[in-house]
Image 1 (spheres, rainbow, N blue to C red):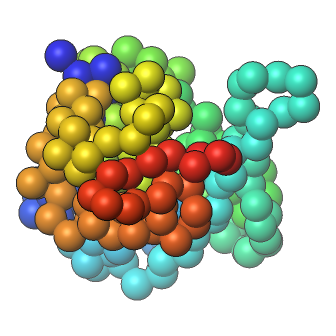
Image 2: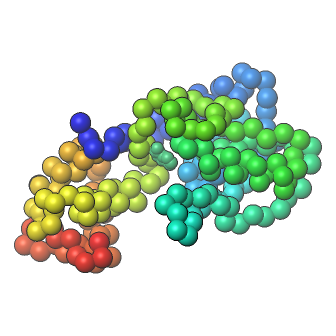
Image 3: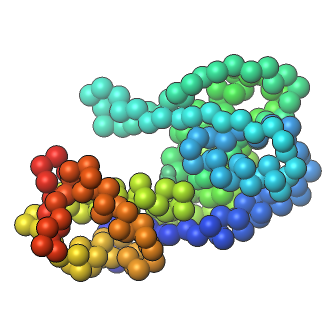
Length: 227
Ligand code: ADE
């Protein structure tokens, strides 16, 4: 069993799931005038929904997670709370996933309060029902066991973070590792085959090295201070 359950999501799955989500919205008999992506995770699904639902107006709001002083918990805030006049419009807020539900709730409440549209609904590809405090109006897949969905648009960022975490937390990495042993630890930690990551694996190693978080020499990868 992996320590952190990760599922690699393919571009084909994203298109299939977005198509399925669009169908649910269509079948409900409701059609949005404006789609709002929750940046950055909602961008690709929102753009695909525009295509499937024939919507031309696509906006975004950006959420940011903020660690409150002296608190471990993160708070979601909106980074650029701009105004528009959405009077009489039906607005669909789109994100990739509802995990805790903080982000989409924040976006929905902001839009309701500040843009004053006729109606706001929410749609996501996935909904983690066991942890989320809210259920989106539309979702394509219900997830019961918490998993990290490694979406294709954050592959480099995620793989880099995943490797950093091993180097920080796994005692076996302290003195340095061969490439093969790092690959083995990665598979053990995340349950993902390095061969399924294609060029992203090398890009992540190059990035860590460029950022001076690791040193690669003589075939050995060593964590550096600050990593
Ligand atoms: N963003 C927030 N929660 C997530 C999850 N479980 N998987 C992927 N992206 C997320």
